[in-house]
Amino acid sequence: MSEIKYTYFDAKAAGEAIRLLMKYGCIDFIDNRISFEDWPKVKSTMPYRQVPILEIDGKMAHQSTAIARYFAKRVKLVGNNAWEDMEIDAVVDTINDFTSKIQACFYEQDAAVKESRKGPLFEDTIPFYIGKFEELAKNNNGYLALGKLTWADFCFVGIVDYLNKLTETNLIADCPNLKKVIENVTSIPSIKAWTIVRPKTDL
Amino acid sequence: MSEIKYTYFDAKAAGEAIRLLMKYGCIDFIDNRISFEDWPKVKSTMPYRQVPILEIDGKMAHQSTAIARYFAKRVKLVGNNAWEDMEIDAVVDTINDFTSKIQACFYEQDAAVKESRKGPLFEDTIPFYIGKFEELAKNNNGYLALGKLTWADFCFVGIVDYLNKLTETNLIADCPNLKKVIENVTSIPSIKAWTIVRPKTDL
Image (cartoon, rainbow over all chains, first blue to last red; front, side, top):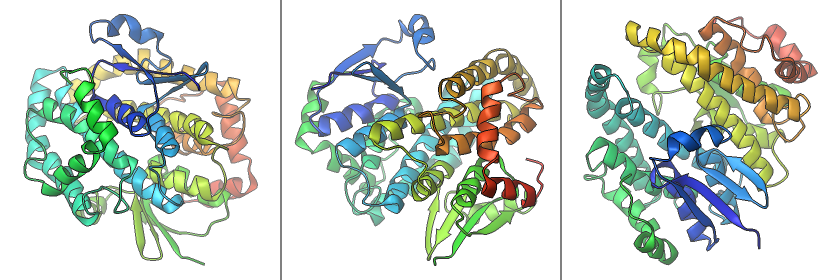
């Protein structure tokens, strides 16, 4: 068996979907967590100044979505053909777009600019995207693509707590179908076990 | 034969890689171009307020990278296994990160904020990323991944003119290996023919 070392922040955020996919497939991994305090001195040692990083048998990979898709293939949560794969990929990229728009507001250093972005974010961007995701979940019977469990659901479930924390809201409070997406992922025994034992983190 | 309708701006930008991939595979498509003047009234009719949009046999898809990957599979410019696919995906996502960082500066509406971003962008971000891409191109013999032609090369070639235009520089002026990447793609007969006949656009 190859040893898998997975390096990310001591956080869920953009790195948890990959942990969930490995847990789903009962793939053992070293859960290497970097504290936010250590990050400034570690950052320059990362090949692209970013985490996550995946290491298997001396080979290294980076980019969260690329790594998630790799494990999705290994655990068979992808589509049955190129078109189906594209449908999943489009949902994942839209989750990433939504995340970027929230981050662009809350990680803005200029206080006045940050404040000015909150209006459009809360009045337009968030309702628009959450409405789209809720519609997808409704049309796909509690999943986000193909009417069945795919790695897009893991990407959503992996990031939603972090997005709630950043926005200090419950983004899916009024979304019964997105709640089903979360239930459909977190009720899987290996995922449920992980959510109990995983380190409790702020983000 | 299925009719393919591809809708994007009348621009290369984030949509040209897909056109190049279709041209590479001699896949006919309706090249539906939206002018920037028309965009404000068309935007709300797009499923996610974005282009590109792909339509085949009444089915619709969105998200530029997802669509590019779909055609990459059709024209066989992907990897031979999940790890190789991840290597390509990581390069593509890094090109997208680089593009986003440039856009975050040049599309900033607040003039003072925009100006303040130019320093870090030109002194750090651009040299860092271009250095990384040049290193990849060197290590992969004039390609960006796997030491051979993949759709990552098409993504780079598709976007570089647009990034040069935004930054008003020639990003690869001092990069002999990235020039080889461009040569390796644009010298393919079907691509060369397309670059001659395609509409001349500002972006």
